[in-house]
Image (tube, rainbow, N blue to C red; front, side):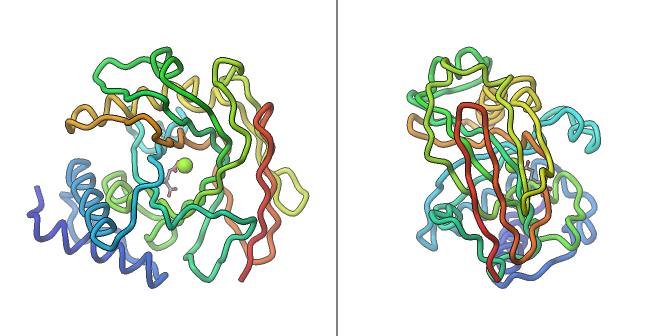
Length: 261
Ligand code: 0L1
Ligand code: MG
């Protein structure tokens, strides 16, 4: 286990990479013994430093929620991270100059109406505790060179959180078959990817349940009003200056944005 001092130093290094928009070599190159627990402790330091700087948590997110991705990473559970208020984009433009090498992925997000506390939470309990689901486009931007990392590295890097666009359509999740909700992701008029909600652990509510159960191990819970991104339905696609991105969800509207310099 790394010391608190090293965790703090590594968190500062990753924040410096984010703020000054430069890549760093994965932490495990220097600390090959870095564990998943170490990764979450470094992530906690990032959350603490952002709070000291006056930033608030805007949403939580789950990552690696597709079976294919978990197999590829040789893990049996997803990872979670935090999205801060300054990461929420409220107009249809993404500024490339603020980022390193961003990618976009289409997701479904939940807004809870009640607290949820694990362990043992199920997808059905999540649906009963949810006020709304909304569409979201997550922008991930690993601070690591060429998106090269191990699982502890990416957890430490706050799961590549960078920006998020949240759509304006809010629906009661019980009115939709969220596992069957289809999504298309187009860039410059060309459909790049498509998928259905079931790509996320069989049903996006299962992702929120798993998050509640993972947080319970650290004595934490999900709170009423919390926004949670459940994980990519589509793959993540690299963005370039001038790209026009358009995503459409069955029953949940669409989100469009342009990538500016
Ligand atoms: O689904 C996710 O948001 C995973 C983020 C971390 C993985 C990556 O940077 O590719
Ligand atoms: Mg994501």
